Image 1 (cartoon, rainbow, N blue to C red):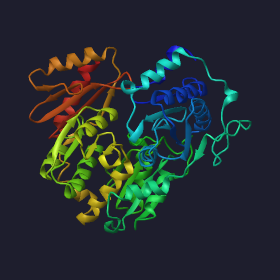
Image 2 (cartoon, one colour):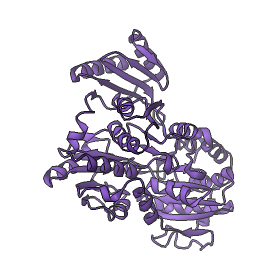
Image 3 (tube, helix red, strand yellow):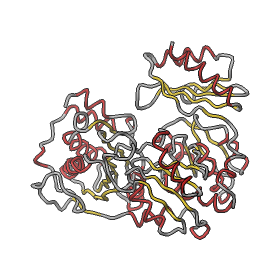
Length: 465
């Protein structure tokens, strides 16, 4: 594989590419080898999602890890937040999750942590691994090690090794998630849950067997070809089946997970989406009831509702840039109890500052249970603004486009915490470059729907010039 191809799969926060043209066994082997050397690791937890290429990538990754002298702890098919849990709870030196999250079936990738589930990014180690791979030798496929006994190995002739051990973490993970709430307070909700043939189908049962809720499962069968719809809840088309199930079955709410189930999204009883920033506000309410006076982090794209709700519930709002490695560092540095993003990532101090959709879901269920109201009745008093959602625009020169928009709205209050935030009394927007793709990201919120739509069209016209 060419140097440029290897460099391209290393994104700011993870590794991701099409298998095998962009990410193959050769790269996986070398990632394992240099990951161990970077961290001086003795034990590395490795999990994977249901993607078809995950087996082959596991074998190659494990071969690289063990060649460098470390033990692979194979935790099997898990969600990404279960991988974080395993690293933090059992004290492993690092962890790698083989997943491409919400990307289409032809993709695969990896997410990385050091000790205590501390995220690795290009700035904190991934660039060193990338540069080592670019300059060193290649992997020999016949050295692939054996894979876990709970799956068919991609290499039937692969030698057995004492340096791979298996561990089932799901029951411990479920108990950990449930420790964030009082399960006895959860009401017997009827909940439609769409796993999208992803890892939600694996982690929901061990958690919900401890709750009185009736679960209506959609697409819980693990299938990396995604036969029903892509496991990307941010696309409204992928929420249609869940919306229908909520209405058809008279559910109290609906839940959708992305492919690796570290993010979750909520529908109310009318099948209306509750956006990630409003979920952040809900979780903040629950946390601040038991931990008044704590800081709650939210990113620059979140609704103004979030800081208002935090302040109204005896909390301290803390605004941050977008991006999980930045957020986790801020939370560690400032001992912040909880942080949320518009994209459906929710971070918890008592979860090693890592994100977990399942923990956030349980917190919301506690809020819903204690309120005694319908979900829509809980949401309506706080969700009073109108948002564009994140609009992604391909432009030839992103910095020039941002500068043009900044100059056009120069009479506004401007700040540069992440991209440019433009603030007017009745509306605001954030414009920034994607951390992972060549895209301009636009988010607008206004007190009035017409104002929001007018400003959005104005901005899109300017950005397209």
